[in-house]
Length: 327
Ligand SMILES: NC(=O)c1ccc[n+]([C@@H]2O[C@H](COP(=O)([O-])OP(=O)(O)OC[C@H]3O[C@@H](n4cnc5c(N)ncnc54)[C@H](OP(=O)(O)O)[C@@H]3O)[C@@H](O)[C@H]2O)c1
Image (cartoon, rainbow, N blue to C red; front, side):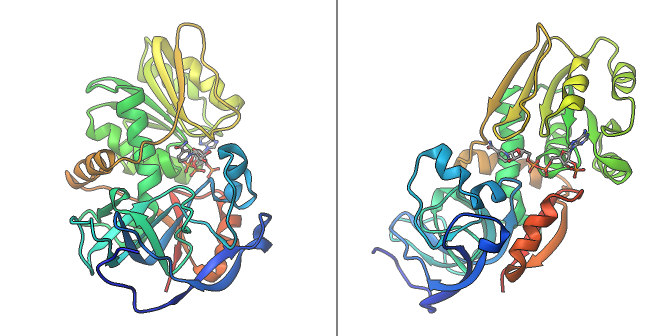
């Protein structure tokens, strides 16, 4: 063990699984505080993001896909925010007391549904100025996934038109704002009247309800010759229908996990991708966020003990993200 200092506590409260399963498998437990190595930091977690993918991880589908052997008790939570409690010997970017946010997928040392998380320092960043701890906690995975899609997959250019399908959701509401910041004209397909109002407030050039409005008529008015590109965060018949508004030669991107997988019409390229959670990508995200006002929508915050209710809430219509408060 190489670390400059230790968390004073030896044990912590966590929501952990002794086996994969439904929400009943999420149990409050006292666990040892994870030990850090030289390249890691220990975060005293104050809030954790509840990812759309967390129920799949809870059911054991991640380890199936990744072919890894799970270690129980298994602590969920890809995203979180809090205060640095200890730094590894090789870490120079952080000191105890720094307010940080971080993401690490399927961390073998445990996720953020806990009072402490040991995380690779490369995956950690200072919290951009104006964000609250809950906002920072829900941001990293969906933020880098939105930005990877826009910059690395779609190569979105200033002046281009972009459809964001699922614009009032986790990735979507961030992608909408990032795309505006990159100079794109955004056609937002949001969910429900509240979703449409939200997307307009975030700066969408046009916002429609993907569950009720005639999307293709609105798309034609928005871009008579078709839309240049699309970032898709929800799949299904309505998605595929909306994607017929993408022009020939246009591009579509969607993160792995969107089901059913979207289909492109002839002459349109389509690519599935994963968010790239590199230090460079997080720095770029912070830079774009810091360059103006930016909304990270936390629709509901549950106490750690109610992680199961938070998972149930993912299935209900909501705007943006859901968080856990970790005291
Ligand atoms: N591969 C990766 O790196 C990566 C990273 C992050 C996430 N993901 C995956 O990406 C997907 C999206 O994640 P997310 O966090 O953005 O999920 P999310 O918050 O559930 O967002 C999806 C949004 O799409 C909306 N929607 C569904 N059908 C619609 C329609 N017909 N018209 C308009 N809006 C519609 C939903 O609205 P309602 O609230 O009304 O249902 C919801 O707001 C998930 O499958 C997740 O697992 C992958």
